Length: 271
Ligand code: SAM
Image 1: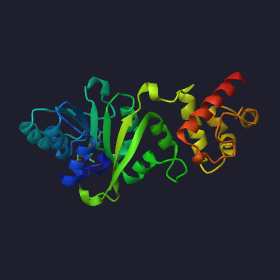
Image 2 (image 1 turned 180 degrees about the vertical axis):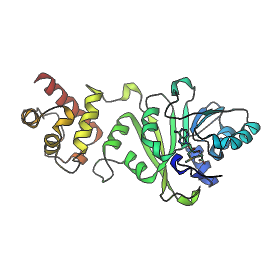
Image 3 (image 1 turned 90 degrees about the vertical axis):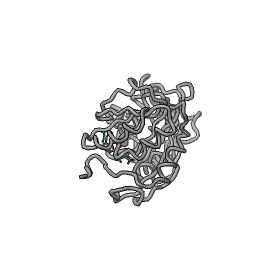
Image 4 (image 1 turned 120 degrees about the vertical axis):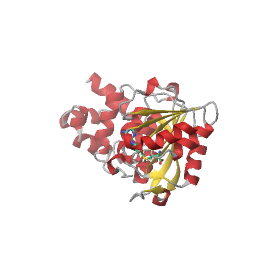
C-alpha cells in the first residue's frame, strides 16, 4: 500500500509497545475504548482482546481491506469512517481512549477530548510535543500548551518510543502520555476561562521575560493598551501571591497562573 504521510501513517509494528500502551490504560472487560486511527489495526486487535467494545475512527478508506479482516475476527469493534476532528465524541459511549495519534492533529484532538468525560487516555505523540504537554514550570519545554493541558488534566510522561517501533519509520521519536482529566470540583476556580486563554497567550509570547514586561509587550492580547496595563500592574494587590511581577513567566506554576489571572481579571473589570 502507499502510506499517506499527510495522514501521519506511521503504523506501529513493535508488539511490546502495543502491549505497553494498552497496559498503561489498564483495560478490562468493562471498558469501552475509543481509538483514533485504525492503520492496519495492530492496536485495535489488542484493544478488542482486552476491552468490552472498541470504537475506531479512521479517515482513510484505503485501509478498508484491513478493516474487513479485523471485523471478521472480532465482533466488538465498530469502525467509523470519518474525520476524528468532526465526530461528535458525546455520541459515543467510551470511557477510555487509546491511540497512536496522527501527529498533525495532536493538539486539536487532545483539547477536543478534554471537553468530554473519560476515565483515562493513553496517547502516542511526537516526542517533543509529549515533553511540552507534560513539562513542569522552570523547564525549557514549559509553555502555553503545558499550562492549558495541566489546568484541565493530570498528565504523565510514560516513555520515549524509538522510530524503529513503526513502519514506515518516522524521522522523529515518539512518546506515550497518560492523561487523567480533573473532576470539575478539582479544577482551580477561574473567573473567566477565555481571559485565561488570552492571558496565557500574552505571557508565553515572552516566556523568558518578567511577567510585567511580557504583559506590557503583549497587552493587546488581553485587549488593553500599554498605558492601561501599566497602571493596573502598578496597583495590583500582590499580598496573596507567592511571586512578584519581576518573576520570569516560565517559572510560574499552573496555580500561580490561575491566581494571577483572577487577580488581573478583577482589577481590569473594576477599572
Ligand atoms: N493505530 C494504528 C497503529 O498504531 O498502527 C495507526 C496509527 S497512524 C499514526 C494514524 C492513523 O490515523 C492513520 O491510519 C491515519 O490514516 C489516521 N488518521 C489521520 N488523520 C485522521 C483523522 N483526522 N481522523 C481519523 N483518522 C485519521
